[in-house]
Length: 334
Image (cartoon, rainbow, N blue to C red; front, side, top):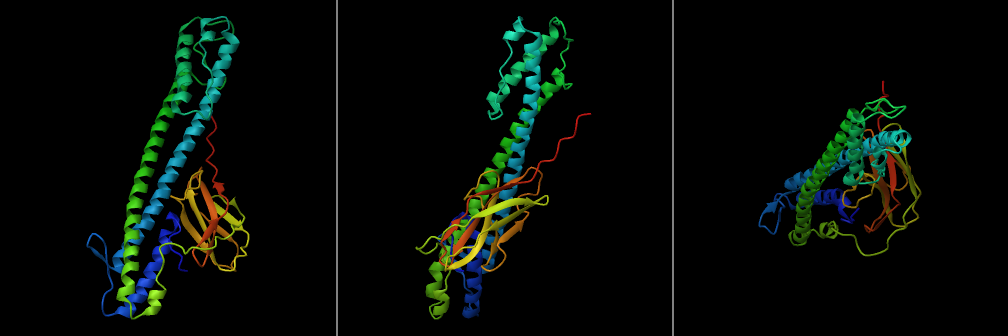
């Protein structure tokens, strides 16, 4: 395979191609050492490039871990919002049923939507807390005992604590989002370093290895050759067991098929920036992938694609598939 970097996803496979070629050149060039010079007037050996490649792979994994943290934090927010909406509606139902023809009835807030953001979702909750406190301090209408307790046993204090916990959950999610940004920035800097090294290698080898035309001819590419884009294949994915994705896909009829790749990232959207190569199958092997990628925590979700790769490096991805690991069930109230 001599495909090159089709997009950000393929940095590691491309780096591996360069490392393999570099090894062959070192054998042919011995006892001399083949290093490359970068624009900043530093030199890089193959061993140093191995360190850059490994650092990039480690940082790609870190990005996925930070995305998992962010996705779990978002999921926790949605769970808390749903629970608060139930309690909010129980509260307004009591106001509707027992406080008609009172000033309290006129002040009852309208329910927010589950999809609202922090401010617009929380504001009616704060209004409900304030009104609940005033109701508890007022005279009790017929059929009501004060302080007001909801049908599920929720007190005003418990509701206020849940609203406060939601605000902390939003703060935690923003912290996790910032961690994703920091991890991406670190990854991109390593990626740029890897690209500069591979570019310098391509520029250096033709001159240094001129006496070895086979090695010059097989120099890995940084970008695919112009040419035919393959037809994408249909693929589907399901959760297998508790923490694995099973992906099956149709066969490609492309004459120059090189491989199938499973790519993906954590989250509920597929991102060409964040997706990594999870596994590769050669033609003729079973058309499936089974992987625990991204599903190491309850509530985690991954976005996946199967790519058809040609020997020219041109590629096409399937539709996006999603697999989600069920969240842990909340303990039943005593």
